Image (cartoon, rainbow, N blue to C red):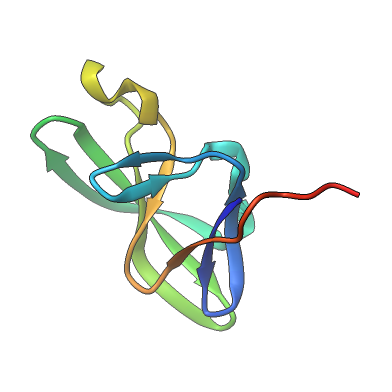
Length: 101
């Protein structure tokens, strides 16, 4: 189980992520959306396309543009469509296998 944590608050949890260039991309349904606000920021990756950003807020702290995703990735990057990766103070950790009671 992978999770993204920002100042002690879990932003996302997923059994499976897609790893691209060392970043874990979390499925959109794994996000705790109350911590995400859309940003106007954009960036261009030569092979993935145009990234859009989220600002994350939790525990009284804000990570401006700390998460990004590709709503319309290039064909080689289609497996990360709408998946979210993290930076800027967000810790991505592997909590080990999920054990259901």
